Every structure is written in structure tokens, then in C-alpha cells.
Image 1 (cartoon, helix red, strand yellow):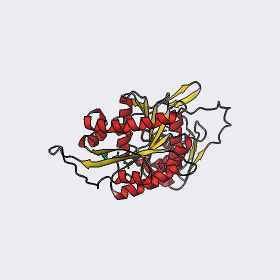
Image 2 (cartoon, protein in one colour; image 1 turned 135 degrees about the vertical axis):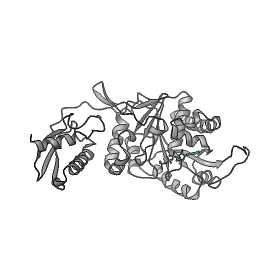
Image 3 (tube, helix red, strand yellow; image 1 turned 180 degrees about the vertical axis):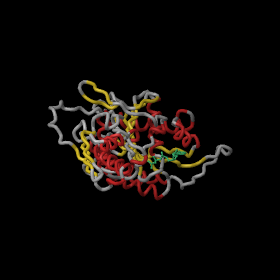
Length: 355
Ligand SMILES: Nc1ncnc2c1ncn2[C@@H]1O[C@H](COP(=O)(O)OP(=O)(O)OP(=O)(O)O)[C@@H](O)[C@H]1O
């Protein structure tokens, strides 16, 4: 290897494979480098067939080499080594196989508190004695790591019964798998697309859930490919739609509900939760101020023939809990009461369908 090629190699040593956490040089992914001041050919050999991170790593290789060696701009070819024929593999079993209930949490539009509701519902179900996991599928803004204070978690892969599993983060007994563990906020753009759905499917099927009573999937806001692919991957027992009372939010909810009800999707909509329903100032505990209008989501549920699961007021500690890693139901008795009523309804509905 020439001095020039060696310099390229050390630049590539700064690129880390998101799944293994190892850099691509010492882990052997960089198979070959041929380069001079005119052009460069870099051959990568991924360990697994159709590695979901391959495209993102190839792009990072081109960007890093271009930045360090501007004379090579536009003259870098990054190729993938021909795949060796795959060894015969044992039929894989999805790690979701032992989960009793899978629930999707959706919202018509962003910022209505879907992730906050998911986190608090998870803690409530845990407090009721159920084993609970969360799949954070919100590729636009994965927030579960922050909401549970596990931002720095690096998922490890383990082998069990000849099958590879991803270890989820775990806090207070709740298992958390987040797309946020694999991407930095700067990567988010590249990720919105087929790569994101491939990685999500892998997270869904390979996370070591170890049989749960409830898996809550925090979907991205709106309707889109991620929804359809997640919902198409596993049997989702029910969808919960979160909305604020504004008319504009409510109108979007209808679209969300229709998506779950569409032919071929057929996910039962368990109901609507109205978040930020009103505000009560501490000094006027008997007053309710309906800042975003009154009962918009509740009324919409009635006209659409969907159950209304409950409403949650604006409470400062709900917002603070989302910031400091402790969902509010753990510290605020009133919030806990609202969520418990909602969780009771959900559990009752699912137990009924079970029977
Ligand atoms: N009931 C509430 N009282 C006070 N603040 C709340 C409440 N619900 C949510 N929030 C705050 O509103 C903001 C948006 O909430 P969240 O991130 O859960 O929304 P989202 O619908 O998941 O958004 P995204 O579009 O990012 O998926 C957060 O700062 C959160 O703490």
C-alpha cells in the first residue's frame, strides 16, 4: 500500500458501523484501496448480505475522502465486494413472536404529544404489572432515548440459539429499541426512506423482547411508508391515535384513522386520546382553560364512531418529564390518574378481544 493509500485508510478509520460500533478499517470492511492523486477505488466488504447500513457507509466514505483529499473530488469509486454465496441459514423466528399485544401509537400531525403519551402509557402499564417494551419508530424525531434518559445507549448484538439479537436499552423494567440509537440527528435526511424502513424492520424482529405483554410502537407523525411497512410486518392488535383539540389537528386524525382502517391494513383503532385538552393554573385549581378549543378530538371520535379513550391536560411536569428522562406519571399523581383510566380502557378492550 502506498503512502497515499495509507493516508486514505486512516481517514476511513474514522467511520464507524452503527450496528457494531466498530470502525470500518479495523473491522475489516475496508477490503482494498487503490489510489493516486488522480482517482481512487475503494472496495468494501460488508459482513452481512444486504447490510442495511451499506449505502450510508458508502456515502460517508465518499464524503470523508473528498473532504480530506479535495483533489479526488468526483473521482472516487466506492464499490462493494461481490457477495460470497450465503451459507444455508436456519429459518429465522421474529423476536416479536412471544409478544401478547402490539399497539401502534399514531398522530395526524407532529407535536401533539404522541411520544409523550407513548412513554407515559408504557410506565402506566408497567406499574399495572405488565411487561412492556417500546419500539421508537419515529425516524423524523426519535425521542424515546431522551424521554427515558438513555440517550448514550449503544445497542449490542448477541447470539442466542444461533440467532443474532439486538439488546434493547432497559430502564425501570421497560425495554426500549429506538431508531435514535443508530442515527445522529445529522443523518436523519439520508435515513428518511427505504433505509429507515429496513433498519426498523430489523429492530422490530431482532430486538431481544423476550416475550412482552405489551409492545408500544411510536410511529412517525402523519401517514406514510414507515406506517405501512411496520404495520405490514407484524400483527398489530390495535392503534391509538393522539390528537390535540384544534380543528386542524382533528382533521388530520381522520386521515390517520382511515389509514388503519384501509383494506389490507385492517388494524383496529382502539380509540383517540385528546392531549393538551385544557390548562389549569396552580393558583386557580378549579379553573380549566381550553387553550386549543374544547373537546375537538372527543367530538370527532363520536362522529367517526371511534372510542374516546380519555383526555390529558397541559401539565408542566409532563413537559419537564419528557426533558429529564422521567415520564410524568412516575411523579405527578393527577397525571398518573388520567393515564391509568386510559390504560384500563385499553387493557379491557384487548382482554375482551383475546377472549
Ligand atoms: N400534556 C402535556 N402537557 C405539557 N406538555 C406536553 C404535554 N404533552 C406533550 N407535551 C410537550 O409537547 C412537546 C411535544 O410532545 P411530543 O414530542 O411527545 O410530541 P410528538 O407528537 O411525539 O411530536 P413528534 O412530531 O416529534 O413526533 C414536548 O415538549 C412535550 O414535552
